[in-house]
Image (cartoon, rainbow, N blue to C red; front, side, top):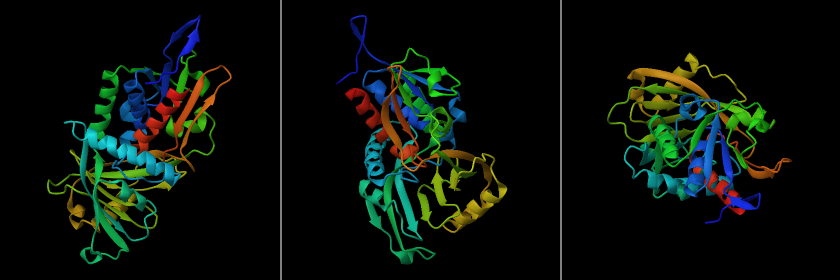
Length: 329
């Protein structure tokens, strides 16, 4: 194992690392750094329930993250990690069957080759017109279970949580040697990155019948998307995917349109009790930013943001690249 060491008064010491951001990217990055033996503090202004990650309808599949070659590599790493986590009771990760119906060509079809098992579905078995369909085994992330579990895991491994309101990356206390910027949409102001933009995603939560155990996604033209995810406490339906929309208030019109779209796949959804809806902002960017820069004060700043709708899908892969950067400094 290789460690970055700083010379202070003639003596070597382990670097002190600040991870900025408490969402899924920040926590997965912190976890891999902790596993490698580094001292990690997590700085964020929001408690876990108020992070955008908690509003996600999460399953493993790339969505609005680029470039495809790196996203594929990061996704593959994360898939293998989730497969191992799924063996831990209470983690909130389940390997399950996912059905994907393509009304138009799926630009992320490459993800099939990263899964343990997949097969084509006969188009005649689908009740609406499609170009192709397939089923595969992918990780389902039960966010209300997984995120508290992940936070607890990171704390058990030695991370410290600190509440900090940061207007700029320069506001990070000076006693940290390395800063990992996992601020998501916050990077727009934190490091003045004008290329970061919000992708508004609204989801709807329904009472879940016990017999719905698989997830479904219909790939079609905008507006909106069609997604059905069974979770332990509800049935999550998605959704919206609106670029440069900062509105986090759920819309009744969006709620009804989401239910109507999903009911094309499972008609019984129209009769299920609505438990609620919410909207969150994903951090969009033309490409994920994952790189190091050296600040004038001698500190190292590593950026890890702009994951679009793929934070859970590529988070561990990106975290591993961050670890490799830190080890190589």
